[in-house]
Length: 250
Image 1 (spheres, rainbow, N blue to C red):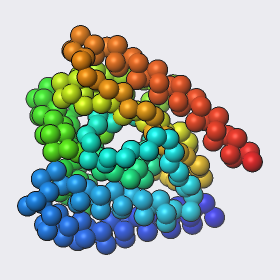
Image 2 (image 1 turned 90 degrees about the vertical axis):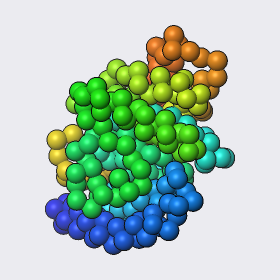
Image 3 (image 1 turned 120 degrees about the vertical axis):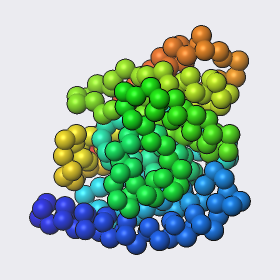
């Protein structure tokens, strides 16, 4: 049965990508002249992930936490990172963000084309020039009143502990004068474990924590801001895991 459910989930996911591509392209073509941040096209692209989860009988994803009342106020959004499924889960949040992602993902046919179309940001790991260009692109999106989404761990940990956070997202927020918006994800590690593309039964949730202002901070405050945010996410992750476990037992 698990093999059949996996087959169904993959087939519907691929078909949705094919169906959504012309829709995203049409929205991009119509709205880009007066929507330089490509907000509308991005929202349609994130709906693809939401629909893929809805068609996957093995995943149950929910959203909780702080409600963002102004979706066009730009944030540097940061989250812990457990699996590829984090992308599908976080896409359920009801506002648009441009994602900082590995350049290899942009090379995936159709999916990568849509990512470039909506203004997501490629990054080649280990290349300084790519990092500089990616940060410049992030600043561009923030100036256009669109949030950017960064995993400050840089990659998914092979174990249950969070990896150290890198400075880039926090330096970006201070330099751009925008708040940090921390997210906590829990449950996705089982949804699609690192090293496999096999779906598994899982209940997962993303929780939005209160924004953290950067007004008055300087580059000297990058490390303290980074550590403060990491501590908040670690505490929030522990609480969210307890809530999920209680929900599953009930």
